[in-house]
Structure formats: structure tokens, C-alpha cells
View 1 (tube, helix red, strand yellow):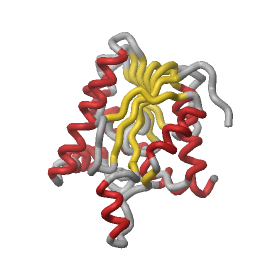
View 2: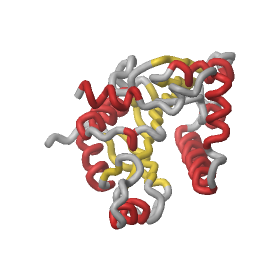
View 3: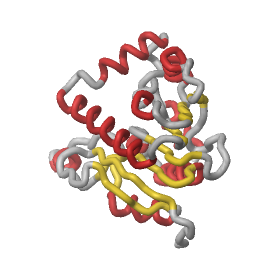
View 4: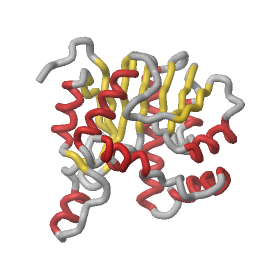
Length: 224
């Protein structure tokens, strides 16, 4: 487990990017490099806005890993926003851009062992992490930790196996990008952690690997 955890903790798109200014510039350019990435960026922002409409003002949000704060503008309407990342360079960007916001907390932390008590946030949001986690036990540990610190909602993204993009790569002997999971299996795992699925975003996706899921906690956690 420790070796697997080290693998994903060391994975950082920002670790070798240099100064906060270079990191910020890279983030701005990254989603402009292709039509697909621009489409994904818009879709992820739309999902975040949907979540804000759901929870409404006066709520608390945890964004982990937050990177350089790509979702700050969407979440800034919340009563309290906490942004956590393992990479100090990414957090420097968040601090420089948004550190004046008194409702914003910026912390370095490990998503597999978050420094918060149970039920600390109304919404726990985790975008673009799980497809970097290849170890199943570590993936379950991360999702369980997201559920633990949530008071009600958990929203996350992952790569699904049941898509044209994944199947095409497998068919032609290419390695699929990222670590994909069977969506039904993942949803069943989440339910055993006390999370029931409320919404898939987009509702149907036959081509793109990435899926965004919204879960709600329920009181009695199923065993087995």
C-alpha cells in the first residue's frame, strides 16, 4: 500500500513546472491544446456549477486535489471553501491568486489521509485524480476518505472502461490512457462505503472515458 501511495503522490503535473507563474501559465494553456481538452474543461466547469446550484449558498466545500485553483471562481460563492493539494507549487498559485479571500482555506495534505474530522464539509469535490490511481486498494481508501469527511455530497471524476475510447485502444493493442474502472463495479464499491449515486454527468457517454459522478451519503452503511 505504501509503495502504491508513493506512486500517485509523486504524480504531479506541476511538480516540475518551476515557479508559481510558470505553473499558472501551464494551467491556463493546458486546456487550450486541443478541441477535446477545451470540451472537457467546459464540461467539468458545468458539472461544478451544477453542484453549486444543488448545495446553494451558505455551505462548505472541499476541493481536493485543487491544483492551482481551477474551480475557485465556481465555488467562491460558498460560505467556506477549503482547497487541498499535495503539491506546494500548486498551492502557491492558489495563494497568490486568491489568498485574500477570507472564506478560503489553503492546505497541503494527503487525500488518502485528510486532516479533517468526520462530516466536515457539505460537498467534497475531487476532479481528475482517480484515473492516476492504479492500485485498487488505494482507490478504495481514497474514496472512503472522501466519504468520511463529507457531511452529505461527494462528487468525483474517473475513467470508465465502457467507452469507445477505452475499447478502441484495447482492440488495437494500445494501452488505454489513465486507469479505468468498470462503472457499475465502482458504484457498488461506493455504496458499501455509504455513498449512493445521485447523478452521472454527462448522463450518457459512449465515447469519452471520463465520467463525473455525484453521490450522497446515507446513514446505514451496507456491509459486505
